[in-house]
Image (cartoon, rainbow, N blue to C red; front, side, top):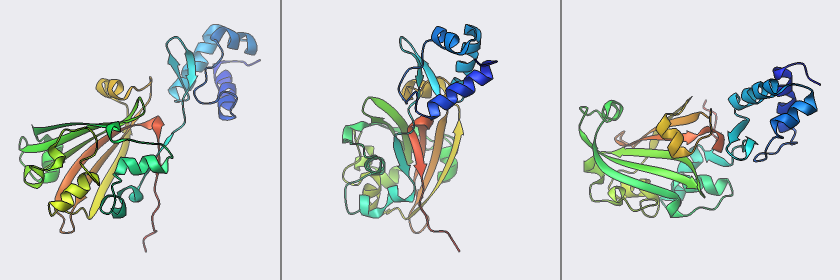
Length: 255
């Protein structure tokens, strides 16, 4: 017996965390939970609603209340950009994440839409351009099997990438080593970058594109990639489904 919806939510939360209801499984029907815990249906609905707001469960039509999967993908930090992967091999960043996660991948897991667009305020500012200046936009949706995991949209100056595989809309990475290898061949070898990460709730378009369950936030990443002489060669914005990634960083502590 429990005395209220918060206590019921606590019991169900503990059961989920202890593996009684593993990720991907469905909680008992609400009337079954009401009978088991000696409460009414309203209390069960309030408890399930609280767990949903915490991101532990999500309602799925014709299935019921499903326990959310824990992050299946590792998103590496510095290691995902290692030059040995893209400069001397053919492993692009998202593929490095997949390999670290023990998950297979294929080039068509990444789709591309490439177009010449007017720079928005943020893009113009980082490149030092006037808003509305022409830049190349390379927008990708990355999938893990049938499930989209994140989007990544990169912006480049036409002078840096015109006529290269980076402006080819063929699905998949831009050749062996991806975009960083292409920039290197153009004389703009990536040397250092700045990444900024923050969380927010998704837009309606992002909910649809990433097939997000109700209440799930997204992790937004912006990336600025520079050459050794501090020439900005790429500005990127990524939107990641929060429940599908664990973000992993390994680094040497500075003095």
